[in-house]
Length: 100
Image (cartoon, rainbow, N blue to C red; front, side):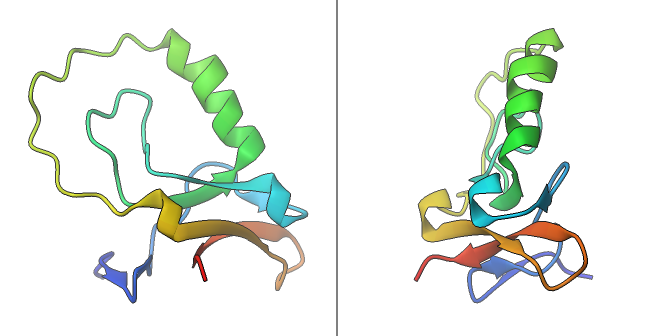
């Protein structure tokens, strides 16, 4: 199935990492898929706690190679989206929504 955006919101793979939440404040938008990513990825939602853990604990352990001059596609603008806590299930999950 295609993961291309529809109406500006990715249909699949719209989250990364631990996405559990209890409120919107627990969620954040990111376009950095991996610690060593040379290019920004599609916009995704994740938990603020998981992203802080990854960026402050896991990423410093990585030995990233220089990127050189990669040809990056134009990414989506993260400021066009908000991360919200979707509480429609028993456990809340961070989800991506277009900014209104």
